[in-house]
Length: 70
Image (cartoon, rainbow, N blue to C red; front, side, top):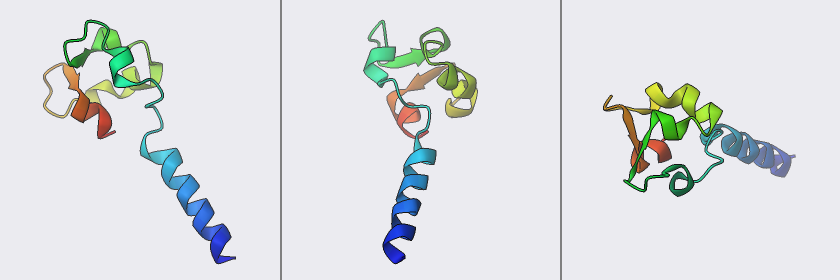
């Protein structure tokens, strides 16, 4: 029983920790300038929805660190 609970806990963690981050940052960074614009983020609809929330310094771009902290 303990093993099953641990398995479910791990699955829940993985499911919630980075649910949108299916597309790798480098693939989204089309112009390869090291940040994602809203236009680039639009390629991943879930990321686009969370863009403003993830843009912690509110500069209109997502750094790789901001992207990875989701």
